[in-house]
Image (cartoon, rainbow, N blue to C red; front, side, top):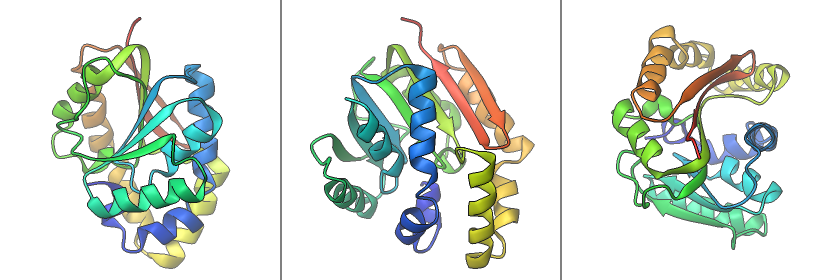
Length: 207
């Protein structure tokens, strides 16, 4: 289950409150990875906001993966509205058992979903399995910039007074340590990117 499924009215929140972060995150990931062609997977994608943002600035074919039938339907509709339905395909699947062949994904992105994965080592091993040589996976919960994080937090508190508490729980030292350990248990070299804009576990498969 993803962060999106946990939030009542997520489609509204994603489109109206979180919307500014996705182009910024996508641009940052593409710039830092240098990956602009091939296959991109957006795991636990919700309405595929991040995957769509990647598709809009690259030549990549994006697969938005979510366990929810409703989220897959909504991601298809969002891609149509953005006029890139030919570049974005929803795939209903569990991150713990991805329906993709080995070494097929040049770029993997996942924002906000990792905190709800049932078995982190299994999920990260699936990510390392499908990641192509020379590819990167960015898994975490970043907001793009410190300013965007503050802006969204302010708006989310108006909707959910417990927002800060739940956010701190997701980003607790215990949770972050568990994510780091799961990444390090794979055969793919990894490192952590953490600053005032959020947290990312980055796996880089050697070419």
